[in-house]
Amino acid sequence: MEGKMIDENGLRIDGRKVDELRPIKIEAGVLKRADGSAYVEWGKNKVLAAVYGPRECHPRHLQDPSKALVQCKYNMIAFSVSDRKRPGPDRRSVEISKIISEALEYVVFTEYFPRTSVDVYIEILQANAGTRCAGLTAASVALADAGIPMKDMIPSVAVGKIDDQVVLDLCKEEDNYGQADLPIAVVPRTGDILLMQMDGHMTLDEFNKAMEYGFGACEKIYQLQKDALKRRYAVEDVEGLEEEAPREQQDMEG
View 1 (cartoon, helix red, strand yellow):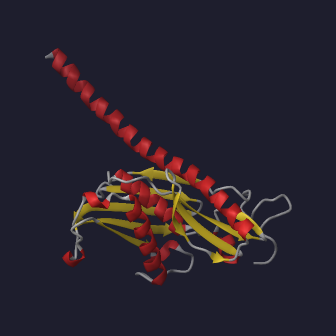
View 2 (spheres, helix red, strand yellow):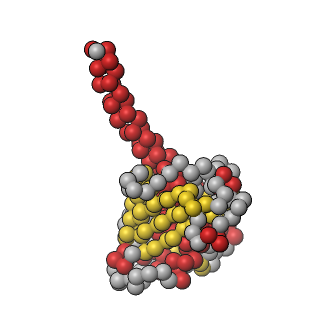
View 3 (tube, one colour):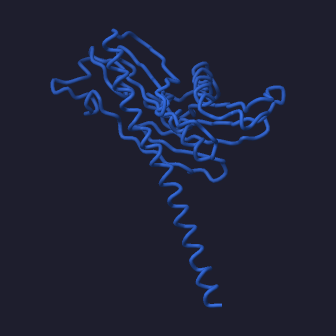
């Protein structure tokens, strides 16, 4: 990519500051037939996550008598990118599925559901950099929506380096032509880091700054995750009260 990606005013190609997130929208409970679900729009990314279980683990030889198995399938559908993607799993999808499964298994109280499986499906409907972070963020909300007992939800974000500057939440062009990409995921209550993958190079000072940006952004994303669940169940509570009110009125009239 020719030219600089940060202008003389310190703004990036999409008009953001170096420490600014792309717009994020999170909705919980978007699928009726799933036990839990979530939809995330993150910049130009569009991600759908669904959770089924705990349910009997298949094939049976994978069953663990002491805990549940958390299985994640991350998939980018064919039209999610500008050049049509070949359908089906590839090495990247298998790798991301594995790291998201491991992160989610850390926070789920798997010992409560021995011999079962908690199945998480993440579908990338539209991709524009940072899909693993958006997928993990969506999956955490979907698990909470399913009522799966967890230590905490997991917010995730990518930090990177472009034009020798550390920046938060890379867009596609910055991801493709930047100098480094560092996706992270954390447990807000404990500060545990569940995902960290470095692609590129940063100095120690740059890395520390990237972690500062990342932790700060994860706190904001965590609040959006909680707000999505509050909206979901606040609506249900209101609808439930509206249904009960006429019944009480009928009882009084009778």
